[in-house]
Image (tube, rainbow, N blue to C red; front, side, top):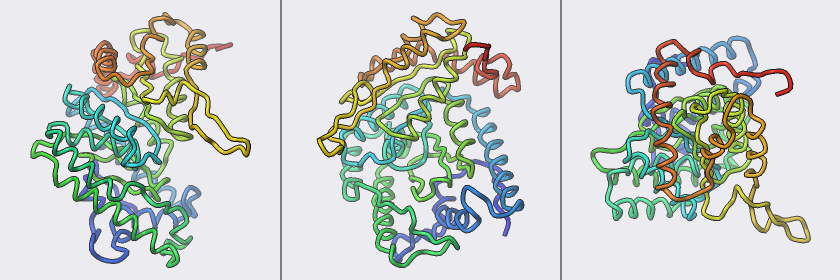
Length: 365
């Protein structure tokens, strides 16, 4: 069996093909999750054979090309929204991300995020319901609240790709989690907002959410991360998150550090009403976390004061720790013309006109 070579970006219907919301373990038979099961059977992050490695690489090359052509057709103002997969659908922070994505989509931005649960799902939900009435969005959120947290499916699939029967209850719970999402999606207005999801089968235990309009799904997580960060040229918003979100923050920080052009410095927005990114975590006597937080503000300030060839103060002005949507809109608006220009250069095969295309590393930097 060969791996697919998609000529276009995936749609939700492609990923859900074969999914039966009413059959026990129907979740595991959807095309997306079956591909994850195959990925596991073929060695996961360590492909068993060269043929497997080549098949996955060819798939990712095709999806990369499909993504380029999609962006070339629309040249959108792409705003990335990154954040943790563990955010519950009933958390205030989840609703905050929904409202931000909704507002930015209304303003003409195109939301891009991962395709998993938590903050990623909230971003796509907000984009989808951009033109919906508040009451309709509230109904959708209430439906989602009936299955607020995705169960942990890590280890639910054996090395041969088969379901581990003792984990069937978790798969049934995941099916319930997906089913309420499909019900909520039915409430979206006829003119539904579009967004781009960029997930990976590397984390295939986190099923792809059904709220985006287009999906660029990769086997290689490194390609997925590169696609997320480099294409979010209008700016990136960071909701609360942990390891994966921190990786994205510092991949973005690396590109901004070496940008060599103050105007091309991409806005970095840290978005959490509780100051997650500006505080240190606290712990009890036993070492258990009592208040989750991860302070990055001081480190980023010190880093960009060292950045070569840019006006540090002007760059730092594009880093905001806020949940004020009007403030975020102002920062993004000040950068959007540069973002559209740089995306156009890239798509037209003139990447060297974009300062971040070649990172300007110099001795001692």
